[in-house]
Length: 544
Image (tube, rainbow, N blue to C red):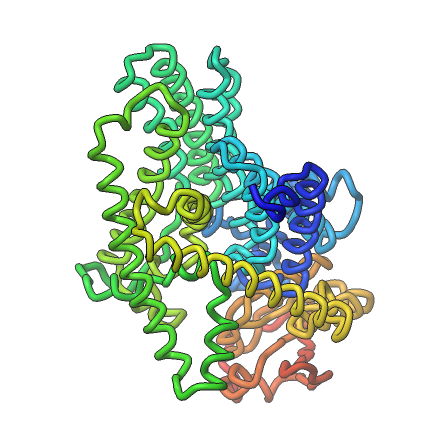
């Protein structure tokens, strides 16, 4: 070992790098947008569960805006909301700060799980410490407005880690499989994607135990599968009983077979290592290459890497010594199985669901990078293996190029993220609730709180669902479609309608909206805030 490797191997270095990684990953979460569409439903769902209204959003009856109804949520499983309720109850803080604290716990544990798994794979401490440091500075796809992705990934990888511990313990104690099964099950409580993926590790364990002819491992896998069936079955029953549907897949205009949609595959392999948005902006500003063309280049690189990775998987599978009583061989098989499942599952959804949706631009599942989160972890682990033993799959020249490339990527990502964090927190002071992109939500919350002090019933209306959702934390009701103003708002009692629109929504507002008792209260950050007084007692009628 050279001096650098000796320094990186020190226990104190490992502790220091782990703490820096935890600080970095939490700082990055603080400087990106947080309160978007998905998260707003999870947060308001937690509030309503805690108040005994179930996993729902507080809306109004279309026939009478003064009558509150609680509409069940089924677009996302309730797992994040349940976790948030626990943190909210323990800390006695408001829902927004409880979410910040919960995410910090999740990200911290994710760093620790990543570190633990690298040691379980018997990587030397010097490269483990370096990998952990780098992990904290990557712009992960689960950052920002996708809080549930943090915990679905955390529970899934932690479950895989406990399975590794089960095989490495010698006596193979079942309690490790029990913990693993519960963790894998709860990953499905965060995202529907894991309904099937949660079964993969135990199915691989069952197959592995059968091939190496150890019945104890086989029976542990069968019992673990039974636990997962029980917990996910309970979730399906819960979802069906409260919303009428066991799960949710975004509906498309039509069904069919659309092979061209597979070309929309996100550049997940370079994107797992690099902040592609940052690089695209920098390159497009200094070179004659458009942002769109750069995305095409990354996609081509991703395709080449994916084909090579497929060759690696085939090379490993056809080796005769894959099935031996060895935890590393099990994890190799598990990694290949998880990778194939994710790509095949998302590819199948993209093949058979139309890319055109009524409420958004063309979109398919395979282009959503955060859905590949477990693969991102696995590819990082594989890159470390390849850095240590490049001769297994690369020639002498390829090994040198790959090592230089990895060192360059690590240096660039740590340097850029460090600069970005320091600039946003210490110079611009834009982090957490101080972020400019969050101000329209905070302004909406503040206005709603003031309005509730003077009005018994306040309804917040906006096409941006996160606005009425977050405002409902104050006690207001929500409407998610501004088209309701084509008619006179039906209400048997007096109420105040707060309409919050951006420039695009304002241009599409029906002229009837401005014939009512409506006034513009303020304009901030590109949003317009209108107050409409509804006297009550009027029938639903079209305005003249």
